Image (cartoon, rainbow, N blue to C red):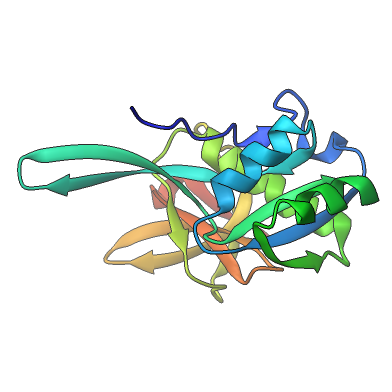
Length: 180
């Protein structure tokens, strides 16, 4: 029996910009991201937990794991009661206040759009000093981020500034246009 991952966000039908309340970044205890998301989901709270699929191989066996894109972090949204209920789960090591609420929502919305694009996604370990660009065509058209070259390929990166991390996808460089 395999345990299903939680929904990546709750409520699932709303854009992140329409979530009600204040955003916090929950730095979880080790390997508690999905459990915290399930706890918040069951208490009808609001959260965003971006996840990606990773294919693992061992000899002749192959399986897919669903992993948090930002290991150790869940994004909570709500009022003081939501914050206290999340802390009561005993799954949070630290709750990080978000001074730039609108900026975080914009970055998380771009991450959500990147995940919905259907391309293979990887965590990106840190902020890069790449050129700002916009995707012109394809399922991610209009998405803004940074570009870097890696082994001859273009990697499109969307960062979450408060974490100092991001997500990256390999993309055809012809799909990109610079932002001026």
